[in-house]
Length: 148
Image (cartoon, rainbow, N blue to C red; front, side, top):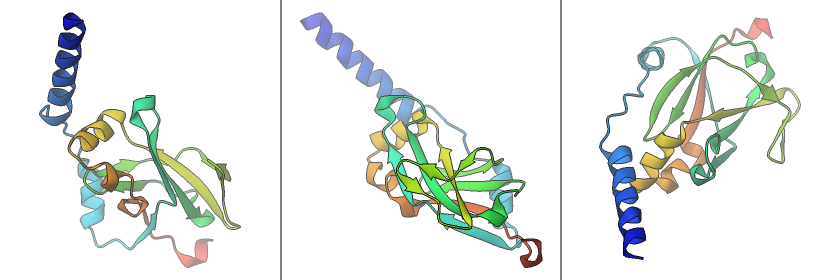
């Protein structure tokens, strides 16, 4: 029994060291440059956020409803308050995710963050901030109104 407790304590200390003190340079300079630029932008917040990193990989994500005219956008920036901004290339959209249907003229995008980053925020006491859909956003370069 004492050995089990020792192993659990060592595991928890290791986990806290990895998530709190190991440097994670996840900032994306391309994202920061775009967000700081004067380029016209379109932004949408998540309509649903799932934060269940204890279930493993791909269990921390936001679902966004985006107008169809942004379906062919060359990139977007995912921003999660407290975590940072990430330059992403669009892939995989759908009309249905997690009991949510896209409204006419829109499509859904499900965008993930790394489980280790989510665990780091949770251990730092930021679970509720991470779980708030208004802290998640996608930013696109503004499309011309003539194009779609």
